[in-house]
Length: 106
Image (tube, rainbow, N blue to C red; front, side, top):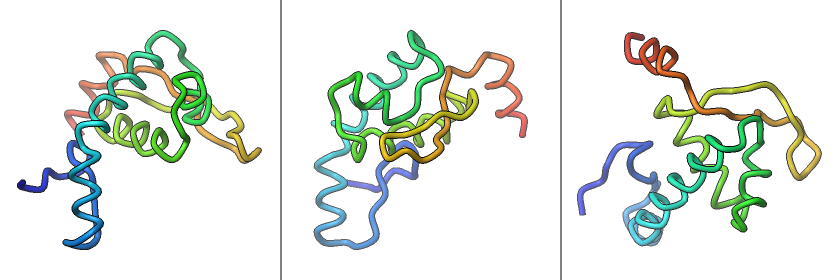
């Protein structure tokens, strides 16, 4: 399987177990990204940890999916909140068409 560049594909550091794990998880990551995007579109202003909790997923599986959505320009920072550990965290909302267009021009 050819490695897709991040954020479309999952990253890994080694060509052994890390690569195998990334390839095995990739189809699940696609589903999780779609679920996260759908949730954010209906519930703007949530942190990645809140999204994970609402979707019944772990923060370890959801935080990277939220980062991937941001990297793709599909979601944008909508202020600050607090994550599960009490630390400051970004709140997310779906990017507007204008924000997506600006990102494409950058």
